[in-house]
Image: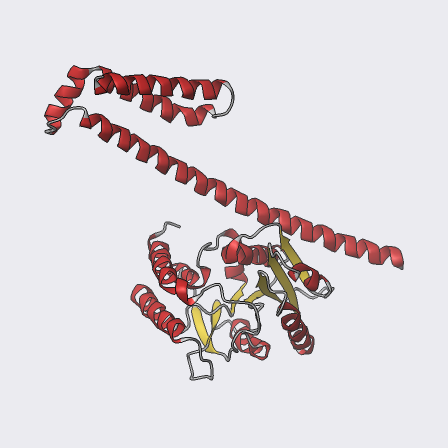
Length: 121
Length: 239
């Protein structure tokens, strides 16, 4: 089987999985956009042999389908980086939230102590 | 008139059941005799042992009980946020393992009271003291001293010292933002960049009284590489 057809098939199946995940609420819409964009570009590149060939020629690549791997790899890197940034943001929020929670709990127990002492008198 | 709150000692503790009791006992003893109005607060960083229970048996000590482990940076910041919200003038970091000498508290409080500096770091190496760490540890400390000197042109003889005092300006700064990963050396760069005055005072320290250092010899090289990276990143980081 031709590599272009194989990759096109994989990309289409993957696109379907992404859309289905959004539909079922497993993947948030805003996070799916980058994935859908990736799928569409990869699909166009893998089916449009002439486009791929001329691009490869432009970049001086002898074996045109290897350009597909390059794009695939680049997109993966971009998405992973985007993810680590989001994880960092989430981590920051979580730490702040934990500290808020702890400080509030301390305030509450301090208040309880004062109330107890008051009721004993 | 209500006296304004003075000094808060923040003790970060993670699985310190062996030594926290003794540390608190001697701290309470010192603070009661002190001319300053000193409060003590323990940040229990999600310990899995009896640390929190032991702290609760000292009603004068305030306990900030984190539900899970945040690491030293997140834990210390919790203490600084508490100090900021309760309007303390000075905050002191004090390790739970009994390394720090409570008789030296005045040594690091006084220069802040006299407004000589914004932060005082207690150093084992300004003057020769009896302190003997492992040779690996001393190599690391000297290495960080030169790294920080290259970046700040100021000599910090004990950059990883966890015995330090800060004034209200820096409490506010830290409540807002505090380095997470390796705060002791990173803070020095951060504050130096912002133009605060940091000074070192010679203090005596004991070998730890219990518990284990978070830095084992096996991990030291890895630790040095990681800290070097975070110190350099701290230098280039945007405000």
